[in-house]
Image (cartoon, rainbow, N blue to C red):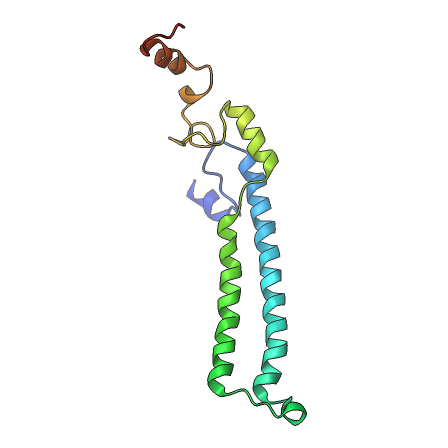
Length: 144
């Protein structure tokens, strides 16, 4: 129901409990990326702000121009965003992929068609299905 969907932390849209494992792994990967981005921004700003403020001017007589300081701060944000975009390359844990291959009887390289077998594969696309026999019988020179 709508109340259950609103109250839930994670909603499964397919009949596959392995998606819970994938959701937990994705959340852990995202949390690690958040911590990495925070560390990166902290270190970058810990070094960049004193340089931009001229703290080291008495030592080396170097002053960072305001346009360069603004550019450095913009680059800090760009680096954090680029780091976050690496989450687009997230892949399911290997044991989940292998389990899905065993359950559905297909390789991961199979083309997804709809949502009946967890990966969007029709049940008749599984190995040894009647559809395979029909396809083989319709091809010339093959025996079933």
